[in-house]
Image (spheres, rainbow, N blue to C red):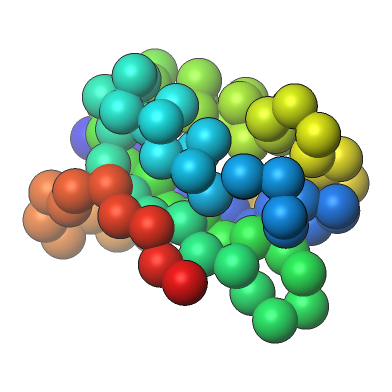
Amino acid sequence: MRRVRAVISGDVQGVGFRYSARERARRLGVAGWVRNLPDGSVEAEVEGEAGAVERMLAWLDRGPSGARVASVAVTETPVLHAAEFTIER
């Protein structure tokens, strides 16, 4: 099991990034959350099997159609318990 926190910067708000991330996570079988930050970046936490987390990080790096991802900063975090995928405002 792997858990990472990612901060995605660039033109990512207002293009359905959070909704698209939730849908992608469900398809990959990972849990976590996504929220917009005041500076215009998006923060996500993703947890699941290592391969699925890697695929989710690769998707975050590309972003959904309409997003222009400048960078993704990834930090490993400890896995304390299984989570469901949620979207925060």
